[in-house]
Amino acid sequence: MGMLAIGIASLAALLLASPSSAARIDADEALARSEAAIGAVISDHRLLRSDGSSFRMVELKGKPLVVSLIYTSCSTVCPASTQTLKEAVRHARATLGRDSFQVLTLGFDARNDTPRRLSAFAIDHDIAGDPSWHVATASPAVLATLLDEIGFSYSGAAGGFEHITQITIVDAEGKVYRQVHGDEFPLQVLMEPLKQLVYGVRMTSFTPAALADRVRFLCTVYDPKLGRYRLDYTIFAEAGAGLLSFLLMGWILARMWRAARRST
Image (cartoon, helix red, strand yellow):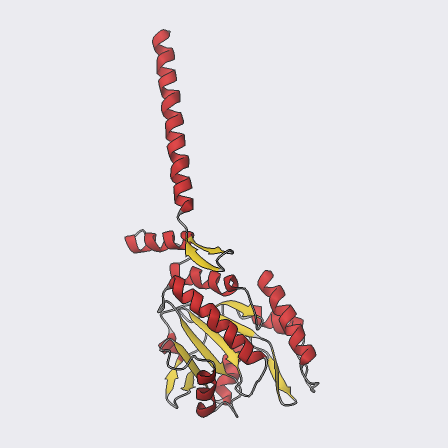
């Protein structure tokens, strides 16, 4: 609910700031469409990188994927949301591992988001050259289908676009897992779903690797004083102390019971 509230506030502010257009976006409908996309499987679309080469969405499977929607001629919301995302990604990589997930910044303005402009956008925001951060666009037909699959709403407005500020988190199998709304958001809003996907919400086996991931999942906590995530094994220390106390109490009761039987 907190994430949804952030999205409503941010989208409402964006719509108020946007020039009037023939087809305004309804905030409630846009957010409902965004949330309804959770669980949808993204098709194997062909995308165009900022260097002019093409690739398919299937190449991004195998790891969680963070999809950020922008258009390169935007001078307000898109640069701000990209900077917020870049900082959140830096913290997430420091905790989960640099290669634990991938990022895709997708230009949805098929007419103007050319490879040259996408490359300039990546350089301006210091995300160029990152092998795990892809900057791309696609043909109008592909974009229409892809944006529908992830529940992204936008419409033309004077001088640009009116659009929902949305980051979509996709699991390793290409299924929409979570939506993040707002050009600014708390680190936990992005980090928690990524932590669930990287370490696994459900244990499917009892192998040493699976158990280690479960321990890391439980012990990776947000420290509000530091403003970042850290490993905290206090839960296991407390559980160990509780178990020791339980065993000690059981030993004392057993001795008392034996002593009582002897006296009888």
